[in-house]
Length: 487
Image (cartoon, rainbow, N blue to C red):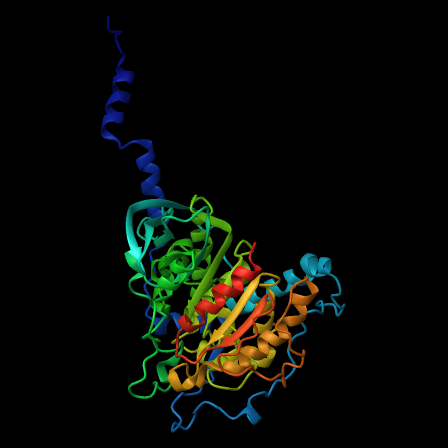
């Protein structure tokens, strides 16, 4: 039997039919209170950050054109205006760091804080979670070796800002007939089966080279011979191609989109927010999350690799992600392995300009300022330098790679400045029980090895190959070196 409802009850039923569900009302209220997405041009975003920092003028970066009035310096006698580097093994209070415990418990944290606040930015605590989905699996061959390839998509939870979608793209390939789990090199590059399309590798100009010289006519960036993926598979390794643009755009206009924009709900960055390099490094950590679950992968032996701007990102990823076992840093230049305090080729001022500032934290702009509420700052005012970024990788396997200018790895990248940084990082590797380059600690005068003669006996390695703007000619050396030292 039906129970008779009184008039008030019928009124309640009628209102329930007319009104949307409570959840929908809550969603509408949330959407109404959500700030409108900001869409800036790169120039507008750059100017907004200068405004936040009180900067009214920046020094222009040097030009790679030798005939330009502000051409870059390539004279070694003028290359070290600030020869004294921050002391990696001295606490902020002046106490020397003489034990591994003091490094791990205090000094490392001080260096991380300086890099996060002033150079690369902080990863916010409210970054949304990510779920990996296997899109497709297929069996194929790479260099004649049977492999299993998996196309993966990492969907970032965008419920806080549905109008911004972020879906990481990664391809994993492992030898089909491997006996047991295999080491894997995660590479910043193109996405797709077969490792097709590799931004930052052969064919792309050096990072920050918008005004740098092109290679001599007829000389490409890429070497002949097997591809990097073929070299890895034939050596019994796997590879994971991770697409940086699927994580964060490589321009200032994209900073209110991508993972940075999603976390900020489409609003502009604050001065210590992360830049694209740190965002790409975050993406590598999420890729590692998946690789740790794949039964074909030896999760103890996952490395990260990149060339040019992605070489910078690879070094940043290794420095901040302790689960990574190794890194191959290809031709990274300024913002990567090159010392900021060097006056040779690309400079801090190039990274604070509108073309490259998005790689860094907003606070980094201060070190290119000529007029500001705080006066002016230069590279000498940075609390850290790249030798300490390399030191953050210790005692894990760290390989610094370059080519030669004659083949397209331009002087703009300052190969020697990166070698000096690796030398200066050596004491930290030794303190932590690892072997450094094996050179004297005099980074200003240490002799670089000849081309194709690497320093590969330690956990910190250096090799300059005779190719161009790629790390492919060093990959066989990297694999052999890593095989000697990995678990």
